[in-house]
Image (tube, rainbow, N blue to C red; front, top):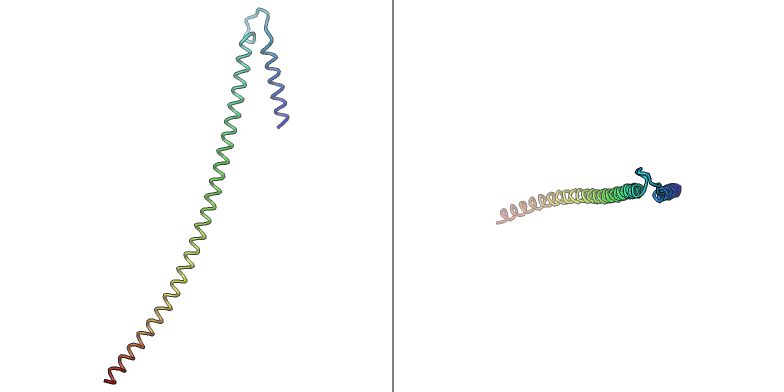
Length: 120
């Protein structure tokens, strides 16, 4: 990373030196403002690339955190579904027990009613 910064610094220094050199009376592009515009353009392109890179990295981090949150939420829903299934099984077992008890009570009440009719 520091090597890249050092290379960029060296390149920037060289570009500024080129921009400062004035060609004595020639009309080539690198004389005068042409080199300054070139350096400014290159710096703008590099800044744009860096900004886009930073923006993409932040979007990637945001998407990763959203995926992590979604995975955690899905896990919570799965646990809730398992708990719900267990509760339904318990309710079904209790209902079966109550049904058996109710059937026994009906039989007893029927036998009691029969005995009461016989006694009368």
